Amino acid sequence: MITRRTALGAGLAAATLPLREALAAYPERPIRWIVGYAAGGGTDILARLVGGSMSARLGQPIVIENRPGAATAIGAEAAAKAAPDGYTLFTAGNETLVFNPNLYRRLPYDPAKDFAPIGLMARFHLVLTARKDSDVRDARDLVERARARPGTISYGSPGVGSPHHLAMERVARETGVTLNHVPYRGMAPVLNDLMADTLECAVVDAAAGGETLRSGRVRPLAVCAPARLSSLPDVPTVTEALGLPRFEAYAWQGVVAPARTPDAVIVRLSREVAAALQDPTVRNRMLEIGLEPLTGGPAEYARLIADEQAVWDPVVKGLNISLD
Image (cartoon, rainbow, N blue to C red):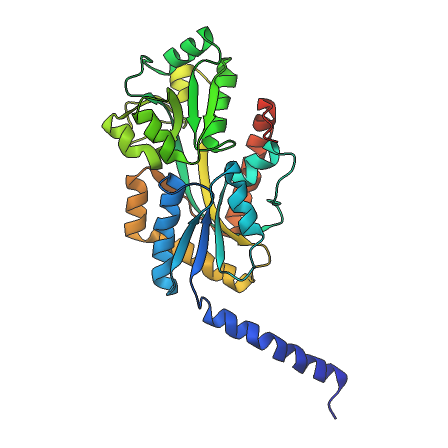
């Protein structure tokens, strides 16, 4: 006699068999990786570096899809609404997961519920810069000029609500000056306008702007880190240049999948992200362009989000910036 419990157990086992087979064969087709910024910036560069290394081991192409705009919210919404099957990834950093909930009253995604963390990737060092031919001599001079002519000095950022935008707004707030924000769709056009002398200043990430900073095509004024960068040893920190105590601002990024992506897929992808960051070619290239590798899987990712929220939630609210 076959009992009802036995029959149910056999039915469940049969139902899960196709899922197990699918996970064992994963991935069977190309994987889409959504980036919330335009091509050519540091976020795009990082995704292509890590994705290229992962692709070689996964045996399937990883195709980068750039969806810039709305402080990564456009890309985040697309990722949040994608099928949770392991074939959509998304670069999610502090702008997507920490800043946006404080900047927007309504978001098209829920940062706490719509994503499954896979792994951390990198920290981007931020540098306060001016155009090469600017009359601004240093960071202090920039502040004094802004104080004398409130709202007349324009600065660019790769987008409203980006770490670059908020770092500059924090500098302005803590020095008591008013600057005019000009948002772009990514870091590359900001650098183009700085080099063309049509933009006065910007906070640039070292990954996208490293070569322009080192070559002098853009003038570095101060780094937003607690210590000077080895790649720019003669450039003071914001604390040194402006006397702002404990000033520290970064962009950092990891990769996520839509919520409800199978745990086995998350584990596989987390392992491949970690392996990519240990790949000497990837790691050396990251260090070369000014990216600091960050290691950690889903647990470390979640812990970093919580730590960053504790630091930045009151800061962003204090800036009194609303984007909707």
